[in-house]
Length: 470
Picture 1 (tube, one colour):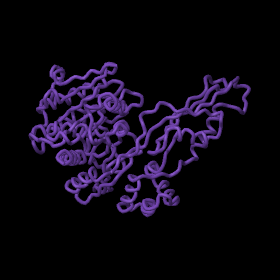
Picture 2 (tube, helix red, strand yellow):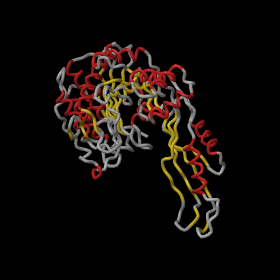
Picture 3 (cartoon, helix red, strand yellow):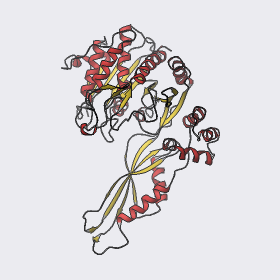
Picture 4 (cartoon, one colour):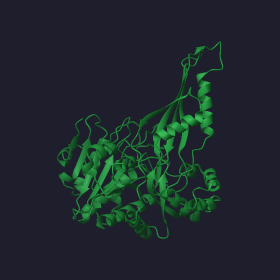
């Protein structure tokens, strides 16, 4: 299929009118807020929105900031006209250095106005928070990337390493056209880089709002759906029999509920628990220290898992039933019963190995277990080398003094799943701090702390300049 790849000659003819760009060489908060507001208030849901429009608007801002036509690329697949991506390039002065890629997705989860306290597509600032769909996930980081490039251009900054930015569509909807996947597979030269910075990790605040840890994500669990299905001849409901498709499926799900996959670990999870054991007053903290030193300690792992579902999620592969479908009539025995089981697979474990383990746990040949669509390849976590971690730690010490940089493996998934297997190691790093309640991403009344956004903007601006100049 042919790709429409349009540079700024096409962008120049767009009907989108850009707001004044972020041109101040320092500060420029008002200009950044304008970028953030425009991006958030551009509806990019799959059902009713347009990532292409958002990409055009961000391209228009960068063009107004001084980016030439040849460095702005609007990538729109002809079969997906509203799911476009933007790639912007700030050329480096040293051709021998591989580029740095700044990645963010600009699509958002659906939001029903009737359920929200405020219009989800109007950015509202109240009591120290921004509220809107995408205020956090992931338009905060996308806006920071646009703002950072505009500031660099306004300053006349000439990085040694080329800086690339990719704002992509499709991350939030399983089965949708995914811009990051397409770019990695079909337009690799456009985004090729030594490594990428992405969403996936922020920072933790204590109950008083004080930063206590800044996370850097290296690796993520792999999302995979499986179908459990039982078929049966059925019959009239007035003559019930013990052999019932719904009952048999229910028995299988009860076995799955009682099962825990084996504990696993990697550098990121061991580093995370070692660091958190020193930072938390949680009763599980001593067990974290034990586990970091000896991941084979079953008692320590059990204590950690029981203390918080989020900690259990990074200790092992997890599988949970998420959808049910059974029967065909209220007065008939079911001929078919199906369940969707969503698994989050620990890096290093194959999709087929998990399917086989589900078969073993269920232990019933009448329950057919099928692997559904696979999202991407499974890749090991990218290495936390000093080349990557050193600058992140150095800038954190400047912007967030006294706050340690803590490695993290994400239990959820990001577009890094498409880049890391393609040879572009991708790290989650935002500098956005939140409390235990989080940003309500994907839920009602999504929000972002104003201070967290502005501090993260400062952190990422400084960090990108360090990476690009070293």
